[in-house]
Each structure stands twice: as structure tokens, then as C-alpha cells.
Image: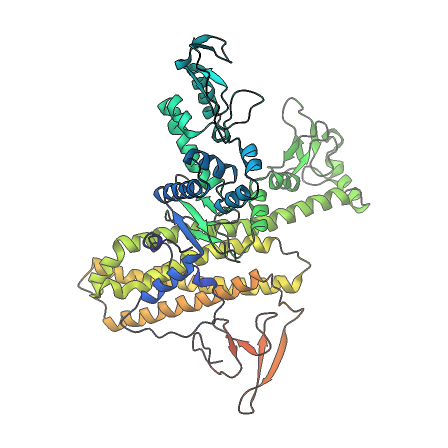
Length: 570
């Protein structure tokens, strides 16, 4: 199935190189010239977006109607019956087709579709099976099964079911022993306009919620759905509302970290476990009432809060009445020191120390995880400002068309995406066991190189560009074109190098850092021409036939003296 090309226009504001960031293809060096072309990136975007398709309400309704019409035509049944069948089989046209022709009678029985409807008796008066009132037959209604009830009872029954939510889509005859389905035509005829509108809405949403290949965008207030075509390692999806999310778990996009790690991390952030760790690390229980108490003053004389009011020593937890000059005064405790030497407090102190270390380790990763999200949101805000007004100002200042300044937006798109990736690497790092030293070292090396490259790019795009905007405020000091050309070359180079850093990081994390070795090794390989070249390789960064660039970490073949990515001399 082809993707919807209309989604490209809405995606451009948020996505340029985002998915190309994780490409497994080798990167080729690029020359920056005066005519900056964007068609290639648009073509690459179109190719990558074929993994999924963004559906609007009109698209969903059209597909739903097409499926109903298709089943109705193939099986020679009414559209209402086709709708009931499709709902039962979760809108899977193929499965409906296969099951129907395999055993039509069994399918009709399971779904509640009768081959021939039973007509209401033609008597002048009939008794309602719910309220037991005798009314003219014109006031009675029945499903295909013929169990007749008065219109008021039907209206109450249908209205009550609709109030219960989407379960009303499987509504059957009120007769307890009957499973015949009530079709849409009957609901439209009997239910109030408000209830019918709700039913239609439930029916529309069921096309997405019951379909395994389509999901709603989880962004608040977004009514778009996403149809996913290709199942691969990249589950990240960009909705037209500019929200990135993971197709698999519907959390915000977190590649290259797997969904299981993300779930554990988010649960940990919201759980009470870290609160308990903090209490354990920074408080002690009152010896009398056992309530945790935090020491917020200098001396060791503690008084529990009312109604307990027990006075005790912070160090040894003994009653303060037994303390004084002879035990060391207010700021020490001889009893504690003596008991500590005898090993009395070893277990409790060890537990408290472990809790403190655990808390400090968690805070280290959490603070950096949160700060990168703040930086990403700020970068996203700066990107939008750049797109809406700043590029036009800069174009006027340096007298260049806006199409020639596209490289600045590309740099900001790269920054936004790299901040997202870097953020989730801290969640990944938290769950690497301390005993896996080599794996942890490789992770920290790759993360550090990527983070350093991102900071250089961010500073160049933010601070160094600002002086050109300052010149807009002071037009008498117009920058020389050649100066801006040099800035352009620098920013494009940093964008490319940073992209390569993060490609290395993403590939390594998606492979589970499998290539890690226990220690760094010296690799000596014969080059063409008979020369040997020794290069120091961080554990697991490259293969035996490649050397990593000191500047951008690109894995170059030993036949090359110069980095193929950044042209740095090896």
C-alpha cells in the first residue's frame, strides 16, 4: 500500500534528517557550494515516510465505507450486515472473506446474523416483553429475530448501552437467550439524535482501535491516525501534529532505546521507590514511634514531633537523658563510636550508604535525562522562530535568498533530533550493570563523543549565528559575504560530523554494544603500497579493517589517510 503523499507538507516543519540519522549506509563527504539544494532531502524523506501513512478523519471514514461496500458486494449482504461482520473480525476484510466462505452458517451463528428475518405478528395489539404493556403493533419494533418490544423500551435499552461506551457496537436483542445483532438502521430509527451521533462516533473510532495496523496519535487533542506498513528496528513515527512517538509502545519516540527499557525508566520516575531511597538515605527512625526523622540542625540532640516528643541521640539513637558531657557533648557520641568499632551499626550504616549511592546514581542519570529534554524543547522553540521570522531577517541582512539559508534549518533539525536521542541514552546507561566495565566504557565513550559534537553544533547554530542577527538591528555594520560563507561551511561541517557521531551511537546501542572487547587493542594492518599503520581503537568502535577518525569517529578503511567524512588527516 502506498503512503499518503499529502503528509509530506505537514512533516517538513519538524522532520528533515531525523530518520536519515540512523541510516546504516556509509556517509559520503559533501561539498558546500553556493546553490544549496533541498530536493534530495525531500526525496529521501518521501522514501522513508513510506514506512507509515498519516490518516485524517476523512481518510478513515472513506476506508471504512470502502471496506463495508466491498464485503457487502462480495458476500451479497446488506451494508449493515457487512458492518456487523467487519466489527466482529476487527475490520479485517481478508479474514471475513475467508471465514465466510469456509463456513457461512458458523459465522452467522457467531456474529448473530439470521439468513431470513422473522417478521412481527400482524396482530392489532402486542405485549411488550420488557414493560408488559399491550400496545398497537405500530408501536412495536423487533430485530431480525422477531422479539418485539415497544419503542420506548427500545429507546431506553439502546440509550443505556450507548452510555456504556463502545460496548454498544456489539448490541444484541434484549431477549436473554437471543444473540441476534441489532443493526445500524434500527439504532438510527429508534435512538435519539444525540445517542445516534455517539454511536456513529464509536463506530468510526472502532475502525482504528480494533485494527492492528492502525493506531491513534497519542498527542493530546490530536485526531490523526497512523497506519504502519513496515516492521523494522525503526518504530518512530512523526504525526502531522508534529508529535514524535513510538509505534510499538505509543510513548514518545525513544530510538535507539528499546520499549522495555523506556517502560522501566518511566515507571521508576513515577514510582515511590526513589522517595523511599531518599528517606532511607537521609533520615533515621525515631526509636520510640519509628517515624522517619531528617536531621536539619548541627547538634545530635533530636526531638521527635508531637505527640511523641521523644528526645534521643542522632548517632546512637539512645535516649538523650543518658547523654551529656561524659558521652562527648552535643556534637559527638562516645557510645556510638565505641559501638561502631564493635560492629553494632555496620548493617544499618551499610544499608544507608547503599541507599545514598543508589539515589546519587539515579539522580545523575535523571537530571541529564530531564535537562536534555529541556534543551530539546528550547531548540524546538528556536527552530520555529527561525522558520517563521528569523530566516527572513537574516536573508535581508546578508542579501541572500531564503532558499540559500536552508542549511541553518537543517542544523536546527539535527540539534532537536540529537537532543532526543541523547536524552534517552541516559535511560539506557542507567540500566547497564556496573560489573560490565568494558560495555559501560564503550557506551560512555560513544555518548561523550556524541554529546561533545552536539554541544559544538548547538553553540555554532545558536551563539555564532546571533551576531548576524545583531547586525540586523544595526544595519550600518553589514557583515562581509565571505565571512558568512565561512560560517556556512563551518555549520554544515558540524551538522554532518554531529550526524555521524550519533549514527555511531545509535548503531552501537541498537546492537546492544555487542562488539565490545575487554580492553582496547592496537590494530596493525598492511596498507596498499606496503606501508603499515598502527591506530589505537576504543573497544568495539570499529572492525579490524577500519580506523576511527579522532575528530568525528567515522570508521575509515585503512587504505585512506584522510577521514572520508570530515577530511581530517589521520
